[in-house]
Structures are given as C-alpha cells and as structure tokens.
Length: 437
Image 1: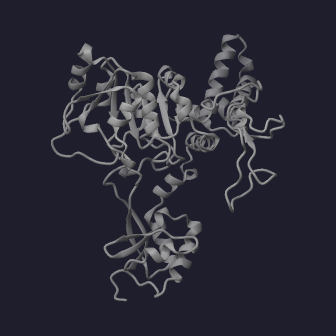
Image 2: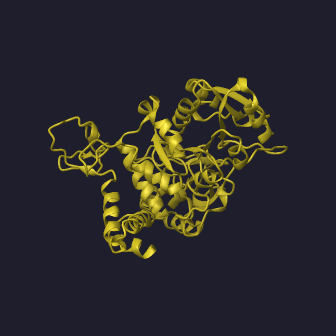
Image 3: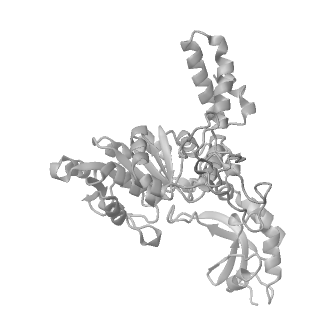
C-alpha cells in the first residue's frame, strides 16, 4: 500500500492523502475482481483529490458576482504582489465542483483536510472558536440542558463568557461540581434528572488561567461514557499531542495541552478549536468529530451566518496540507516556536552584539498560561518602545524591568536588518540594560 501511495507522489499531495487514494483503489479493484487496475484507479483517485482542492480559476461565465466562484474577486493588499493579470485576484472554486461543473460546498476542502489531520470523521469551519461553540450548542442542544463544570465557566478575550454564549444558543446551562473539584459523578447526577433534559456534556479548556491546589477534574473518557455526546472545547487548536510535523517531537512547554486527535480518540463526540492559535492559521473556528454531529451543525440556520469566506478557507487549506505533509517549517508559528535559542543568540550578536541577551517568550493568544519559552534578542536600557514604534516599518517591542526587549523569536530573519536600522536610528544610541547611559 505504501509503495502504491509513493508512486502517486507526482500529484503533489501529502502522503496521507495518497495512502487514502491507494486504499480506496485497492478496495475497489479487489471488489471488482480486477487487482491489476489498482494502480490506474489510485492515480485517478489522487487526481480527483487534487482537483477537488480550492483553487484559482478564470471566470469566463459573464457572471460578475458568481456565488460558486466566491462572488467578487478582491484587490491585492497595498504593496503586495498581484494575484492576477488585472492586478487583482482571480475567482476561486469556493463552491464549485470542477469535475461536474455543479455547485459544491465550501466545507468540502479545508475542513475535510483538517479532519484528516486530526483523525476526525468530519469537520466544518466557522468564523472563530466562540462561534463554533455557539453553533454546536444551538444545533445539538437548543432548548435543552448542557452540563458544564463550574470550574470551566471561562471568560475569553473581549469579555465573552461561556454562560452568555450558551444563553444566545438557546441551550440551558446546567452547572455541575464546584470551582476546584468536579467529578464524573456530578455530570451523571445531572444527566439522571429527567427535568434537566441534558443533551450534551461540555468540557471547556481553561486555556487562559490555571486552578492549582486541591483540585479534581474528570477525564475525557469518563465524560464520554455518560450516554450523551461530549463536546470538548479545546480552544488552542493543537491537532496532535505527538506533533508529527516537528522532527524533534513536541516541545516540553506543550506538556498537558489537550490535542484534537487524542481528545477524539478518548471518546469525545466533537472538538472545537481556534484556527489562529496553536494551529497557526487565520482567525477561524473548527468543529471536528463524528460525521452525524458535524452534519447537524452544518444544517443549522446559524451555519450560514457564521461561515468563513474563500480567503480564510484557502489559508486553512494550505495550512492543513502542510500538517499532512508533516512540514512544520512551512507553518510560521511552529517555525518560530521551535527555533533553537542558539540560533537566536547568533542573530542577536549579528545585529548588535553589545545589546544581545537572553529573553523569555510566551505562547500568547490566551493559550498555555504561565508557560515561558527560552529565547534571545536585544535588551536595551530604559523604555524605548515608543521610539521603535515610530519607525517605518514600526518595530514593536516590550518593556520588562525598566529595559526594552526586542525578542527575536517573533522576528523573521529577513527582518533582522529592519531591527538593526531601527536601533541605529535611536537617539541617543541604545546601551545594554544595566549599563549607565
């Protein structure tokens, strides 16, 4: 099977998708009593998979706002590369099937690839993770109860709170357990009450805070065995705890972070997560898991109101292909997160050796509270952040212990020269932290 899949490499698809094509082809060939046709069938399936991806097209239909082709083409960003011959971007196969010429679904490309990457039966994409939770609750528990631990009634950025999102969905919040200790038996008690009419158990990852000390929480497997679907909002978007896209495996600072593949394998019916956090993509929300539950969400009227456009879906498709190719270097977040400190020190010394020093980076984005990532950069005495912001392009730094820190973990190497010019333009000239000016 692996040999057949590798023979399809010229299609440019990630190996897991080629394995899928090979398996389907072999199964069909054996079923039809024609094993010799497996190779041709595999090539056809791989070609069909490649053609099904979201791609740019030339719109010769005469329909200016073609719904299936993403409606209006958009202009390129100021100073950016032209996307098409007229200086704008082409139309795209947002909801168009190239093989049949008929209307397709925007949920057939990037979401299917993300499902494959995290081991889900199906997936769909919406605007952000809050809208993913809203849609799931509305579609699967509208007018019914949803059991949630009191210790997981989180508030995310901008003041949005789980109880408020649930209220807007039409579901009823059923608080169980206590702030610091909740057991599976607390959920079971709520489910056993006929008046509560509990439709779902909801697990919410405490992504932006920690509870320590005298604590207890049920496992995913315990909650998945209660008799109602478990929806796990893992928030941060880690696809697989093993991080197969990283040659050296998961970094230590990811220890304990929930991942979509493992949460689904433990029995969750659905997971929801963000596209713009540990997934490393654009702002989006992903719903992945059982096909019947995803289909129920896709059929709800809110799904249209919360759906993303072709820009987001195209970016997510490229991202999912990078994950399936196990190419962490193609994902800027993971490239930044795993750059060795020694490399950052060398870059800092090349920019301004007198200012080079060790620093500490953080994941940010409301993920992994308290986690620090060893880093390196430039450390200047005093508060010089406003002066750096005033440059063109602006350099955004931080102040820590009365020193200005330019952390190179989040600076692309191509911009080292920009940083060097910004530092050289400071007046008076910068001096190392701890040195009298």
